[in-house]
Image 1 (cartoon, rainbow, N blue to C red):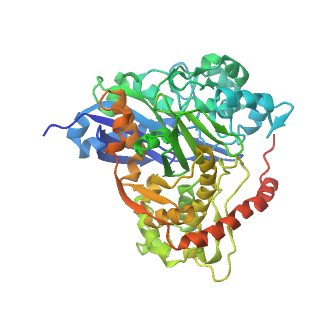
Image 2 (cartoon, rainbow, N blue to C red):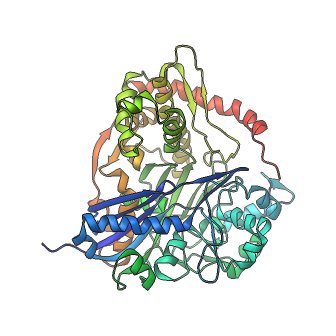
Image 3 (cartoon, one colour):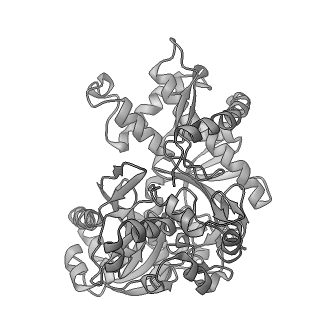
Length: 530
């Protein structure tokens, strides 16, 4: 049997390195993964080791080769989807000078305020700078410090020896591409959160000399910009040997995870939304124009489709709340674990949760949970917010707490969805749900009940980023066009709002009130110091 050309789709998330073999029709014929630890540091730091990513990539490709040798031999293209907003300083030989400063890292916030402050100011940033960012880029640096604009300043100010040795600052995707090809580039979406580009014309994203000059970072430390679908080269000899692939395999530039997920979910048409549920979550939709809602932190940004923008509304932590619950509340020697009801393997924990959630009524017997484990990005950009259980009593059970976590993430998503409706200018009535956490039937139903809309689940939600990378690679290789993708997508279930919707409307009003009342408290508890 002749095997169709395969794309080796790399999917590097915060939780680890994954890879799949993807055909142009979207068929995913392999899946392998390795965890990569996140190092949390005092003062809001969060880092990962790029070398650990590269080593893990060789391991997952080897796994694919052992299980699907014929499909691996059919690989003609490599394309990546990665976490975004990470920053790696590399030397002239492409070697990382530090660990990657993660998208969760907030240490750069005071450096950002010092670089871009002035009078009059909004959240510590001069209004003049904000106006220029919004006009040219469509957004602005997060005041939390969670993006490369702040990370690079952190390196410049707190690590001057590293800054001096830095040849180029790269996002996560850019570093993987450098390792694959030996070529230093950024994509139109990976460079976005350096906040130095002119994004007013989607097909021709370029650096703005004024923004580069104001950034405080040397212009020659920024990489050239390419389209997500550009073939940036073939595998470098060391990369081909590392992965066990021919040196003739071409590399397509790829995309940041939210860009790739929008392709993988099949939501190609304007205003067609998807909800991604992973460590973080987001609502996204392709739109025809650059636009920004300053108050909610939602903007349309450059993406994989050359003549379109991608509206992205990011929730900082979603599935991370379940990971926290699993790792910090359900301990390794918990009776539930030893009885086999909850596995520490992320692939089966949703099955266990789905047995528990239906046993608790909507509203979690009065318990509310706010899912702000590491601050929030939208519809408020506030690094001081934190998670909390509220209204716990002597009657509260662990099952109540579990359902409250599921509901809290969904309630926060409703808060976000309200801002999305306003941004799009039309209410969203139906949404694709995808990402690893979408495997939970109970959670999908809770989302439908809380949002009051139809939820269409991706038939293979775990592989959405890899499938998106595969399709971007297939477009770059000339195997398909973006217009072909909607007909290739599949959903496995449609969830519709039930009787619990009315109850959640009441709880949502309380949830909004909680934010208003608790935000000042968290500000006092977690105030960021300059």
